[in-house]
Image (spheres, rainbow, N blue to C red):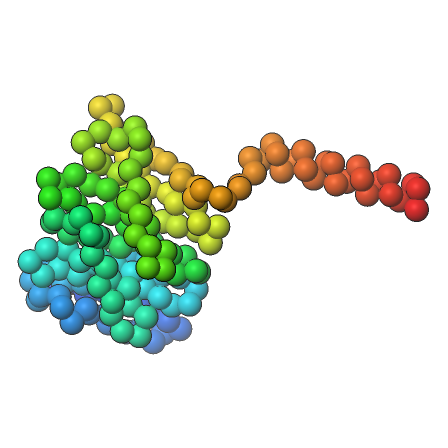
Length: 176
């Protein structure tokens, strides 16, 4: 999955030597189509350009993804196995906001430390954790966002849990 240019930009998928061009039918020749992310099911997300940017989901056909408050445009960058899509959009004042699309729910993601509305969401894993970056007065910083209701243990917690389970197994073995 990637992009190539022949005077216009095209997304593509190379699967086992089979090359498929991914061109959103709404894209202009000057603007083109850009493929940014793919999941294990072969669903592809990206952007196409006409008078502005639009995100898309390609799943045998194209579905346009436009943020409700997008002014200049929307870019879809990542998709996980559940079909959750992340990216970013430019609002009417050129502020930049990350987003998550999960089913029919659209959620804006703004890092609380970002200044001037500059948060980008780039990827999402199968646990629903979102990575991206934001800008403040000192530059660019990465972030990891964990959705509400998702518990991701810290590495130290995992070690503590593993040692506890090992201890229980030893006690059971001695008494069993």
